[in-house]
Length: 171
Image (tube, helix red, strand yellow):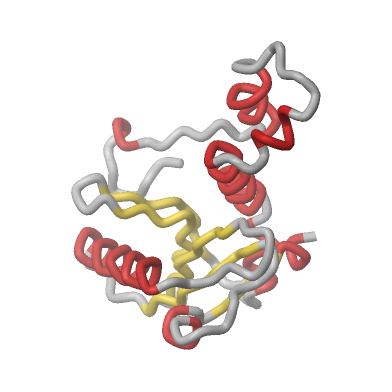
């Protein structure tokens, strides 16, 4: 993804094939894996990181479906990921719309409803502040979550979730 108003050195490259990423993380480093190895690997932090990355990649391949689920499919928009090295902030997907709104999309893979914690709520607030500070954007921001099974309703849900999309809405 080429970030708007950024130099070529700030271009972000992603391996778009989920199986190749899986192979490079799990199969190639474990050529002599024994029976039962996958059960152990699938509970580790590397698998959790890969599954989140693979889910994010899947979502990015279905941006039009995300826009349709948000009922903004007919509004002209530009989509991109965003990061700021100085602030250490990264946003999975921004949908910058012609109606002066932005859907700040976070993709969350979980085995059940994703729970927003106090720490994550703070992180999300810092991302928004970093984005506004770096870009000067005055657009209205809608926090949008794309997750496997929805977002658990708790005290941070009402404050930080403007829209939510589940995996079944992408297919």
